[in-house]
Image (tube, rainbow, N blue to C red):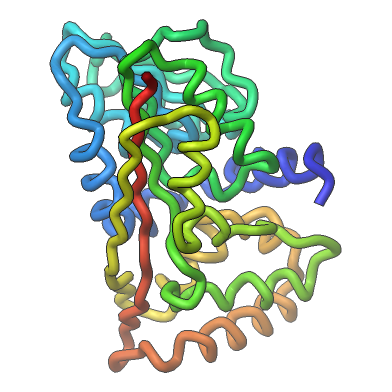
Length: 272
């Protein structure tokens, strides 16, 4: 996919997904987000950048970790995600964090201005992953830490069948190379290639629980990266996609619920 087109698809796709995102993914992603924050080892007073922050599920937790004397900036390519996070910030009356729309490959921040940079499940969507990781490295002060979380091996993510099902109905792939960063030691090598040291990686096996077929469908088709493509399907195409996707996760059905296996990879590194 052309990089400009991919960025546009991601921006407006996540705009579509914003109102569904937390409903379908808050509990499912918590295990990866918690491990990411554990590996980040946040301290009071630190300055944190959360790239690809979405609605702020990690960002708000990071703000708690650094306390009122710390600062947190959340960035995302989706304006709707940013607007949603800003509304929640105002509702909570928080003053130690803010949200700005930015491309992960071109962060509008000063060199060496953060103690910690985070990216929870966003790097799979950028056209140039190495450029995004270099931007994270650039934003860190010497001695600063970066931690990312990505989905793991395709074969260990039981929901991955949604990609060929949707891709067969659109002109270009929605998420090319989605599982690349979670394959073997790819994330570690990316970190090392841009200059991170003390690189460590943790793989997490988990189960994504959905109470119903509607919840399983909503997560992958309305609350995620497929939202833009799905919004353009007519009713008959949606019915076909529903049938095919539910067939792909049929082995994981437990009565009316679904227990779908998944894997996350969390990687950390330090800027010398």
